[in-house]
Length: 304
Ligand SMILES: NC(=O)c1ccc[n+]([C@@H]2O[C@H](COP(=O)([O-])OP(=O)(O)OC[C@H]3O[C@@H](n4cnc5c(N)ncnc54)[C@H](OP(=O)(O)O)[C@@H]3O)[C@@H](O)[C@H]2O)c1
Image (cartoon, rainbow, N blue to C red; front, side):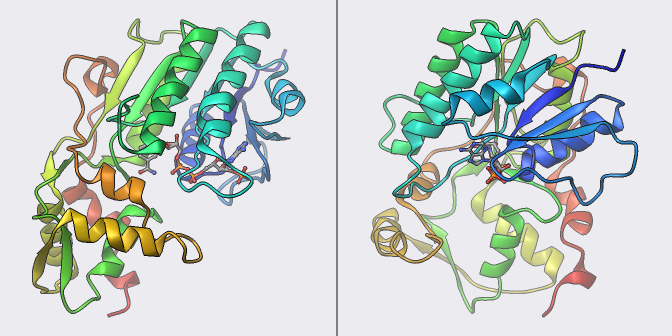
């Protein structure tokens, strides 16, 4: 009998695609569930990949995408609200719906991807919604596993390519003094961890915070990137109040290049808590940003 597939909601996204790849490469059957599902560019004939059109806001489509699955992963994102899409609908109601339907379908394992720093008291509507989403998932399925990564990097990511764009400016404005501490984590390491957590011998832990091997300040990350790109630019502190004003204006531009939620997130450290599950529990040695830069952002591929 063929293996039951693992349903990866958001399986076409940055993290979702890496999870699908990790599962396929370890011989598992996968169902990619998204509003516009598509086979990955790297897929080969014979790969055990099914596609399901599903919207977390739509009960019937989520149910259909879960039918016959052995496990489910929620890697759906929404970073900027629109008239049609709210944080509440995706991160709270949608996440809760997926958990409730997975439990009703007797699916034993569910991994909910969230983020470090979620809090119901945050000044950010996004961060509050993520916290309420975790609660909605655990209310519906107490055995669900919550995975909170720090900022993700990898080939073709938004993080490093966004910073690379900044290094083209004559001066680089810092968030405050650039002292916020981050723990950039390779998307493939997080994908490996999540793939393991859907397996038979998953860890008994139910909350994971995943950060890379190095905690770096925002300033240090930029300095490392500038050295890799062999560019030299002054780094100029800019108070968070100024960033809030910029975000209020930028929010209205097409594609919302900077949001208030992003500014609020940059005001707090984003570092994994040592007291919850981590890579060490899964025996994964994560890759550092420094060692991964040549592969993620090859010098030869960058126009000067
Ligand atoms: N990127 C990071 O640095 C980072 C850091 C920490 C945590 N995370 C978390 O990791 C998760 C994945 O983030 P990402 O950056 O990989 O996201 P992403 O690249 O923006 O991908 C989002 C995925 O969600 C799907 N999707 C969006 N709305 C949907 C809906 N209503 N119903 C079903 N699918 C929907 C998209 O496909 P369609 O548009 O076709 O539906 C796509 O497959 C999120 O929970 C995010 O908060 C990310």
